[in-house]
Length: 166
Image 1 (cartoon, one colour):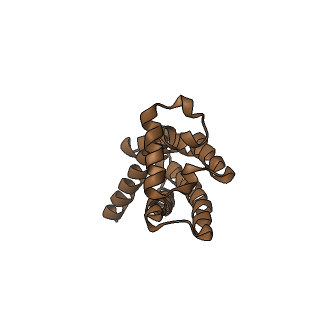
Image 2 (cartoon, rainbow, N blue to C red):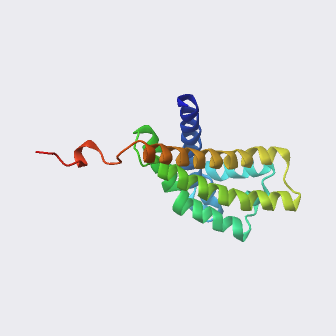
Image 3 (cartoon, rainbow, N blue to C red):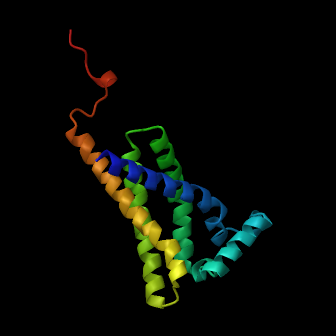
């Protein structure tokens, strides 16, 4: 079970790092004025949209802009907290992992639903989005499994919180 847990932690850390870096630098360009970003970042976004055929990033519809705002306001800080929690081995990281997974899966459901129903998604574009849906499921399972381990592991109080008997 330790190898599976370590693999899940590694996957959650990788995708949390991806979100922590990409959200403010690339995704924010969909909702904030272009004048706030340096030209290399604007060029990177244009290149990505052209290379992968990402029509949602090239001309973001209203729902995509809303999901991007959600990502910036909620998922980005959550990704940073989850990354910190994993690296510092905090007990609460299972909660942030669960929250990040549920939020990401909800967003990916809307985005993938649009892509599949529009018929405009290329295999290359799906290779960029589907891993985030897989990450979301891994993050949810990691959060649920970690919570259940703590619940069955005895007292949830740390040694300093227990009463001393005299």
